[in-house]
Structures are given as structure tokens and as C-alpha cells.
Length: 351
Image (tube, rainbow, N blue to C red; front, side):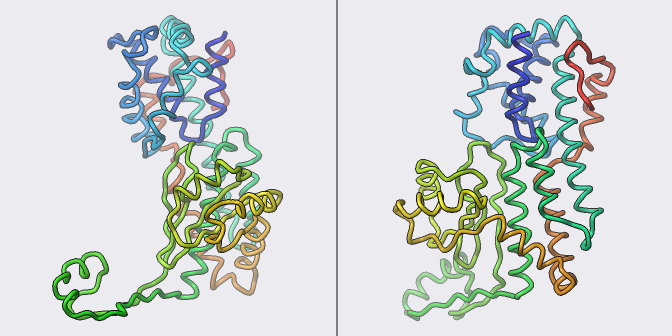
């Protein structure tokens, strides 16, 4: 069945949250329940289906797609799910009582169970047995999670960096060097609201922190993390091409940039980066081997109490924040009666 092959291709390419497959499921649901959707006429669902999808994903995965409109509309292009292919899928779905909708949400359940297994590994392995290599392998080795491995790297980096910065009690100082009383008086509100200095205060100190941008965007090539002490951190597990390097330059305005990549791509990234206009802003390139070494050190007997516990706590918290749980899916599937639909004839899943 051509339409099922097209659907499975979209599911394979999707990240954990399955935004595009869920959008297809909602189009099929609105068509099956007689709500004015004609699969052959794109304009009856092109924009409305984004709203239907967002309503569902807010409930099931706790967020909505942040991809560009162009990227979201790619779903209806010829090589994905054009109206002619969607019509075939909708006909089959109606004749079989919503089987395609049920199939898509069962595939989401599979992904969320994979995520749950990774979270269980973090919780149950403990300081003595946790291994960052195994953590990453659970993403890169699972077809359903492989597309989200970049988020696993990002979480891993953030947990490590924030742990070490906090343990060192790093502070950032901000001071006004030109104490121009006239400017300070006339722009007192600006100094207070923007710089945080009230009254006659001209210097302040505060804890150094890192912040994750926190978006899940399949087309994102911009900033992953920023700090209040200088560097912006760009996590890349794919080769940094010249086009992608330009994107990093355009999207990152920080004076200093730290790039993180796979070991085998470090030399390529160095070579490409040195040709870019922002090469002098690159503070350093960190490889996965570096990260694994630092994780091992944090979890060693020497640093287990000072760093290890906080590191795993940060990893668990950020993982839970980034990836959804299965909690809301089961009630949703019962409400739609998907749990009553028998999946067979090629539509069977493992969930």
C-alpha cells in the first residue's frame, strides 16, 4: 500500500514527539468524523491541521512544534504525504474504523516507551554503574530514538557543564566603569531594569549559569546553550558543513563560541570553521571523548559526592523536561477508542 509506505517513511524520519505523523492522524480523524475535511483538497486542512496537532501534542507530549512554517508544510509535498496519497490513506482509515489513526498513536507509544527505558536507566543505574556511553548508545542504537540523539548530546553537555560551574561556585561581576552621574541619574530606570543595579549601585556579583534554549526543532541549526559569563555552546553531532557553519555564525551573536562534536568530525569542523568569518570567536572544540572523560571523572570515587550525585540529578531532570512520558497517552487512546481497534495486516506494532 503506497500510502502506508509514505506514512512509515515519515514516522521513521520523525523525532520522538512525532509531530508530523500526529498531524496526519488528526487530519484522518477529522475526515473520519465528518468535520469538513476533504483529503483531496489541501486547503481544507493545510493550516487547520497544525492547530489540531498542537492541541493533541500539548496534551500528549507537553509542547508544540517550533519549526518554521515552511518546514511544517513540507509534510504535504510530493515526496511526503501529498493530497493524492493522503486520500488513499483516509479511505482506508474510514473503511476500517480509524485503524490508521490508532496505528500512528501506537507508534508514538513505542517511542515513549523507548524514552521511558532510557530514563529508567538513569534512575536505576546509580553512581557506581552509570555509563555515559551506554546512555548515548540507547539513542544512537534505537531506530525510534536515533533522530533525537542530538537532544541527548545537548542534555548530556548541559548536565555536565552546569554541575561543574555550580560546584566551582563561579561568579560573574558586572561593573560600571564610567560613573557619569548625569547619565546614571537621567537613565536610572534603564540601569535598574536592564542592568539590575538600583539606586547608586555601580557594581554587582551573581552566580554564573548556563541556559538551554530548550526548543525541539528538526530544522534547527542555531544556538543550543548560552551562558551569563560569555560563551555560547553549539552542540553538533553531525559534520559542520560550510552552509551549516554560516548558519551558526548568523544565529549566534555571542563573542565566544564553544563547539561540541563527534571525535571523527573534529578535524573537519576545525578546517571549515577556520574559513568562516567568525573563526576568531571560537573558544574551543570539545569532542565526545572529552565529555566521556569528564563524566567518568565526576562519577569516580574521588568526585562522586561532590559532583556525581548532582550530575545524575541534572541529567535526569533535563531528560524529563525534554522528553515526554507516556502518562497522558493511555487515557487519550481510550477516549478515542483506539484501544479497541485490532491492528493487523501490516499495521501491527509492538506497543
